[in-house]
Length: 194
Image 1 (tube, rainbow, N blue to C red):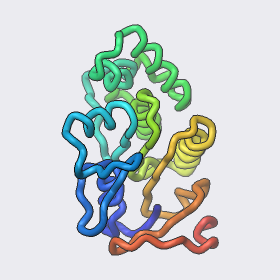
Image 2 (cartoon, rainbow, N blue to C red; image 1 turned 180 degrees about the vertical axis):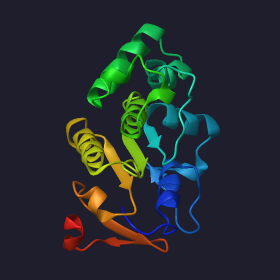
Image 3 (cartoon, rainbow, N blue to C red; image 1 turned 90 degrees about the vertical axis):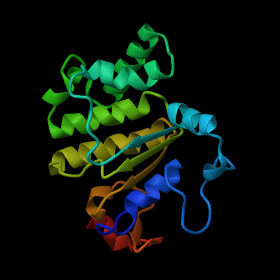
Image 4 (tube, rainbow, N blue to C red; image 1 turned 90 degrees about the horizontal axis):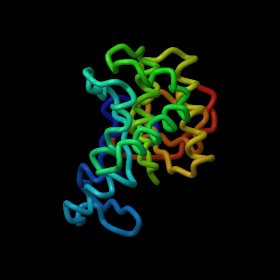
């Protein structure tokens, strides 16, 4: 989904995550209204099925990357060795395994995005919501992030919803939708090429 700043992209993701109630209509996940889930069930969904990568998300600077990526599993009371193994696998899937021993604050912007995606997928979610995951990255890094998200969607069978202000950042997405003023429409085919 692409569209101008203030067009509703982040709001759409918050609604899809159950973090915000829509002004009109309802948001459902797996046949259940998100705004009617008991707090414990909502938390369980976010620990095990719905993962989010937010634009400008700041990781905990005092942690090693491996620990940072494993944290969602550790919070969900997974055994440390298993959580660490899955964190290494998630980093490898994101082509960021070399970052494992680094401190989070030592990462480049591109590495940080890969690490945040690894942290999101370590729970093996059914739904991944990503708000501008390629924002402020070089064209090469943007392409790498979008290839990674496409692989997650097709190979790992994860439903991925990505937003960005530019259609060109979403060139590998299918379908591409345009959002402005809270209205979501099919994007013209020409938008795929820029």
